Image (tube, rainbow, N blue to C red; front, side, top):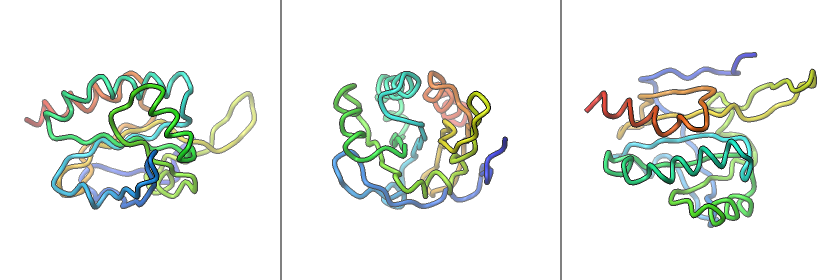
Length: 159
């Protein structure tokens, strides 16, 4: 199964406007001048998503030193994002993409098959966006434990 769309490096990152875990509107535009590590995860408080979020929390200082802002996105409601963030002391915004518009724009809302049953869901993915809003790193089907290390490796390679 393939993504509905497949983004490529050097193209502009799709814009979005979503609410964070505190109900504040967050847009990609407001991070111009900063790098952004935007990652999509299937569901808050599940094992893989917890590993991914905690890994990013634990690498937050290193990412911040390289000028990177971390943003997590899932189809969960604001209240579930808030619970997830508080439960694991996450130090970056979690965005509620309840209508899946951002997920579709980034090509991560896709068909999945589980025990022969087809459904739609998030393909765990990460996108590194430069200061001008261009995609400089793309990882579709990223492993939860590798989101931070992939971004850090690319950033250090470019330094």
